[in-house]
Length: 83
Image 1 (spheres, rainbow, N blue to C red):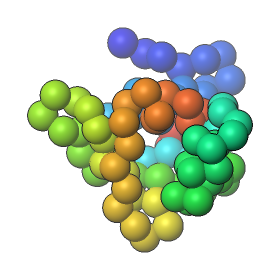
Image 2: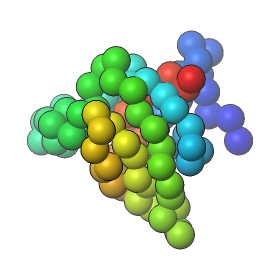
Image 3: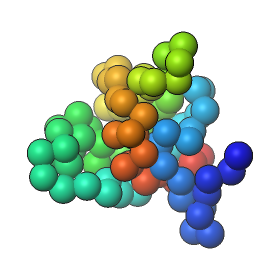
Image 4: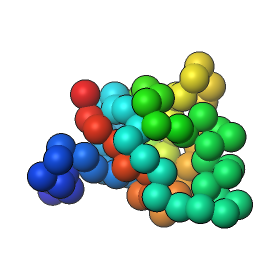
């Protein structure tokens, strides 16, 4: 299932473990947008998807040298460009 748009962008939850991508934008405001930014999910930042939990939620990513776990619904708000 390919969830890429015509611009080559997709959401973070669609990247398979071992995949690398770059944050294009974070599609939310308020407290959640601030939290994701505080975790390092800002435009231009490179991300490595480390693994999925057994039931695919949450996902573990490596961003700015830190390991971060995100719910799949939160990851779907982060628009990325796959590398």
